[in-house]
Amino acid sequence: MKKVTKAVIPAAGLGTRVLPATKAIPKEMLPIVDKPTLQYIVEEVIESGIKEILIIIGRNKTSIEDHFDRSIELEKTLAEKGKSDLLGLVEDISNLVDIHYVRQKEPKGLGHAIYCARTFVRDEPFAVLLGDDIVKSEPPCLRQLVDIYNEKHGSVVGVQEVPDEDVNKYGIVKYIDGSNGTYRISDLIEKPELKDAPSNMAIMGRYVITPAIFDILGRTKPGKGGEIQLTDALNELARKEDIFAHIFKGKRFDAGDKMGYLKATIEFALEKEDLGPELRKYIKELQKKF
Ligand code: UTP
Image 1 (tube, helix red, strand yellow):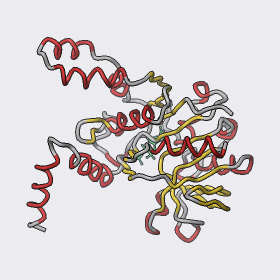
Image 2 (image 1 turned 30 degrees about the vertical axis):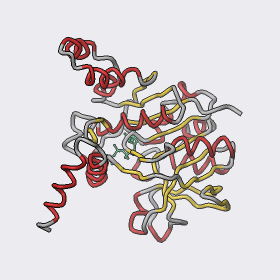
Image 3 (image 1 turned 180 degrees about the vertical axis):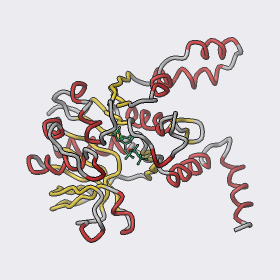
């Protein structure tokens, strides 16, 4: 059985939910405290033992390439000023891993973005991490899914239960059997109405997928919202191969949504030694006014 050695991070969406911030800056580059969302995701890939990354970029995404590249001028200035701690931070980013890029020429949907990865992935199982979904967990969320893939030898989608009112915002799975948080799936439905939803188990931006998906994606027609949906292609894959849903441990933030972005910012800041204590005091003060 082939091992999972490659990860694909789609980051070519328009980010309309956070306009106008995303007019010139990709939402994946908006910082959560002092690090762009995308860097948290790249770090999760590395901590999960995967060393090759493909980022799907769109227009206005050159800042992504610059961020993960070396910045010789900045490094030189910091070295001259003796700012070795900052120099370390800047150098670390470019030393993290080998990152490749491919351009999705038009944002035709997540399924279409993943299809752009076919030459990079070839005939291997691969990981997908959405560029705006951060998961705080130990072990890393992707590591948890790769472990299930190694055990079951089939595609795995990361899921968590959501309340009824949120079901229509996610891909939802229908499962046949399973236990201990891992279930065999029969159907995957993109953003169903609550009355049509077969469960409350929602797909949360982390996947391990077998390469059979590419043939299917090549002929998947636009679905919900006129976009080529990865969920629709996975639904077809489930007719051919066993696919599993795994309820991963950890807290997930949708940083591509204003409220999710705020929550992530506050929680990550509270955990920082240099910011947490003062921020906690400030929040307590604010609370008195509510
Ligand atoms: P989203 O649906 O959250 O991204 O896609 P979006 O379309 O940018 O969001 P809004 O609704 O307009 O605010 C999930 C992930 O898939 C990527 C996005 O960049 C995001 O990381 N994506 C989406 C692509 O790479 N290409 C696409 O055509 C669509």
